[in-house]
Image (cartoon, rainbow, N blue to C red; front, top):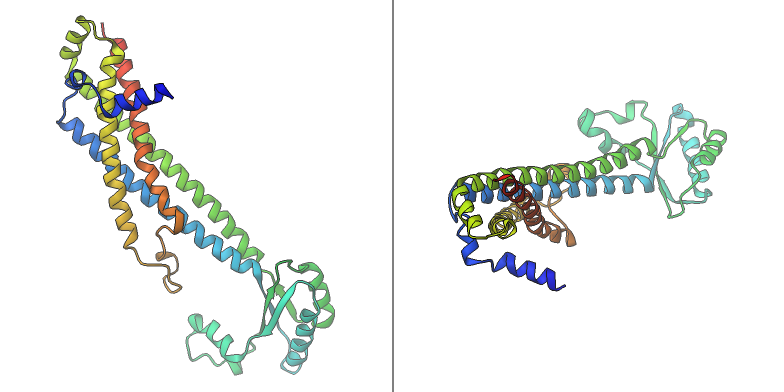
Length: 301
């Protein structure tokens, strides 16, 4: 605990004499700030996109999991009888919470986006659709199909498995892509900060040699670089995160008509997740700068 407190104090308070080793301004300072801010901005949007897409796929999957569709294709003279027989089978099937046949207006509304509002539903051999809602226990789809085959031969049950399975896979892959994107952003940040630290070290070789001649240890010198670059990364990532959260907050809210293009922001406690990005950027900068400084100092004669 005491060592952690000392390390934090050294990081935020620093040493006046050691800090003079690292130039307070210059292109390395601006490069560190810009890279940290830009990468944090991208990380927030990557996180928001993966969470929003996962929510959308989960919602679709959940809705499809609780509902099924029964399609009855039969001659016009048998349609009413088979529809009534199918409804009776569904009424006595364990796990079925409700079942109702869609009327002509509802079926017209389902077909209208594809065929237009002037579709003559009454003159076309359109199958009768029955909406089936299952309870929390669910029903035996295979057993229901066998019962329907005997009572209503024209009935075909669609339990939405072929729609639900790809959505679940898509949600998992999108979450994985979000994690991979954040890892790549962290790796890019580390690489750019390493380049900036190496440039700062190269620009101060003469000062570093003088410090070593008067007895300064490599750890003492490296600490100054680590402190400066870590704080720069923390500030840059903090600014980038705040700007990204503002941009996400003003995006359109989730709307049924907007589909995937709306509701891309955070919800609930997920708004706290972007706040982890600046500390993570500082940690990445700490280890990248420390590794680069000790390697460069160790190779100096």
